[in-house]
Each structure stands twice: as structure tokens, then as C-alpha cells.
Length: 134
Image (cartoon, rainbow, N blue to C red; front, top):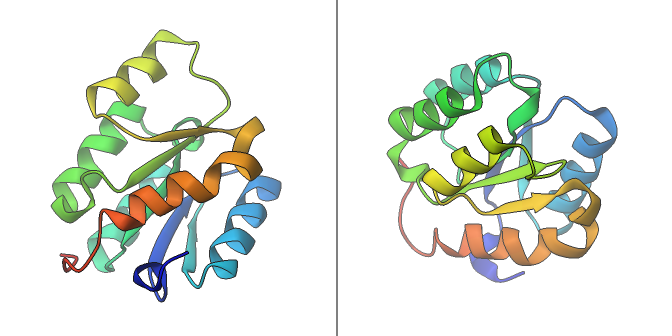
């Protein structure tokens, strides 16, 4: 990972302990600090108090509708537009696909985390470049 990704703070929104741990370890391996939220409501509260450079979001772990979580993330932290990476089981249900497409969210299927996360995370963090977070 490039030096630009070093010391980045990423919010992990995931209710599955195994996936959460994999994400946390992968982030640490590239020099990123990971904070964990167990639900959409908790994630939104954290985003309103703290600055993050990116969000890894499981749309299904939220106690709020996926559309609402994504819209509120972008409202609370406009700097995160383009920096929300969706972790999803699959994109076959119409609602999830619609949210991902409408917001142009990069995504990684759970069954491809180990293969695809590096590239997707690099893209999301690369969008940060030298710009400052809000």
C-alpha cells in the first residue's frame, strides 16, 4: 500500500465477528487504524464525533435501512463521498444493488474479501490523496 494509506483511520461497520476481525487485521497490515461499529446507528454516532478517512460498510448489519445509512454518512461527513466501501454477501437482491448503484459505491463480496479487498481499499484510500478529511 502507498504511503498515502499509512496512518489512515477507517471505520469498520460489520456485525459478523469473523469478517470484522479479518478486516481489522488487513487494515493494520497496511498501516491503517481500524475502529469498529456493530450497527449503522453506532457508526453514524461515531462519524458525528470522529474523523475517518474511509468506511468499510456491511449494508446488512445495520439496524437502519441501507439507503438511510449511506445517505446519513454522506450528510454527516461529505468528505466520505466516494470513500465508503461496501462489504456484501451478494448483490442479487434489488434493494442492495439499487443502493450500491445509486451512490456509485465500490463493493467487495464477502467471498472475495481476501482476493479483492486490497485493490478496492487502495482505490478508496487513494481517493483521499492529499485532501483533508472533514
